[in-house]
Image: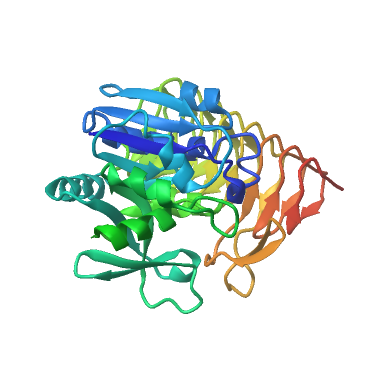
Length: 407
């Protein structure tokens, strides 16, 4: 059996993090999103075919597998999920696994899904149970069969949603041939699945709770990163140089070339990337991932955050519940607020839309190449576009567009 993974989209709902980086390469638990799926499929399928588009070369250069060949095919115009899946037609002549490239499924759930698919002779849709189904395609299932898929209903009658993982027989291509454009001008896979429901049958497989993660918005990286670090998605190792006077507690993975200096206190689960320079005298708290070539220096505290490669947090900084993009630099004394004084949920403005994140703690979502001056301040739920500059002593809040100057 082959696997077909959809990774050609622009990931616009992840801006500003995807302004320069393809969404499948955004890091969680020390790996690109898509690398987690590749690692689980490695040796379990005959071939992995990845559909790419924007930044295709960068995706190819940053993904790998040890046992299973990876083939990349390019999608031209983006005409919807059914059209994307149709690209597999000339490369797969049997049953196949199909997944969205921005979905992570636990290894146990993925393998159970594959076994369930192989047991029957019909298509299978993966189902996940969520608390807010109105934001997804809600699935109505009777016994094991999917009877309906309702996109973003105001009053959902089920907590089961389309999980973005499918087991397809060749009949999916016949259904795609019959699929018409939706009102928004795209060929939707849900319409193709409804054709399969009408003509044959579509089985529904429930993925175990906490076994499925969809990364739609930037803050989803934090919750997924936290779970993956705490539940064995990566193995522990401690390489690099660790000086005397360093305290390591719990699960800590330190990659080759990293330098952990005297007085550093790391309370896991934490991942430290290749050639990262940590310390002296800093505190790295649980559920933090620090990318390769990063600097976290003296009198810095970081907690529950993702700091991407080549970013510096060098002096007297606090960063909590935040995602910092690549090639950023925080001036001495820059502080990130992550909790409202009234302790209510953090409301953000993202792409002009006010959104309740459902999180009590959220600091900053910072795009690539952002610089802050000394003693600058960043309010809760701030989103800073790529290439922006926050001046000395300035307060950044709300949604700040790319290449902005805040003085």
